[in-house]
Image (cartoon, rainbow, N blue to C red):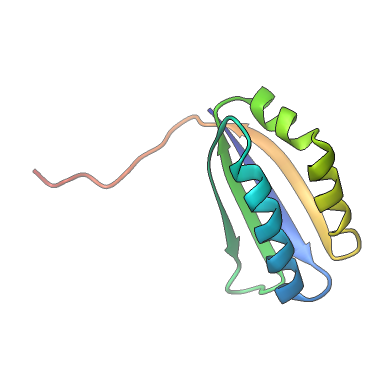
Length: 100
């Protein structure tokens, strides 16, 4: 599994960005290899968002990102956000214990 982390600073309307993100998310939901994703908005800096997406493989993500439809969706974000993206491999993970 790999994790995509994308820090996005919104330069325009947050409402517009969230609407466009939701549209792109629906596209990604149809792509093979996506495990889950979420969009988180900073409470200290409301113009900063993090997109965190888990994919089965880097290749699955790259295949989805190469799609013509995805390129069209990204074009709609031009001038609206600055993006800083990287792909990570999970080293450790945890969850609360059941206490039993």
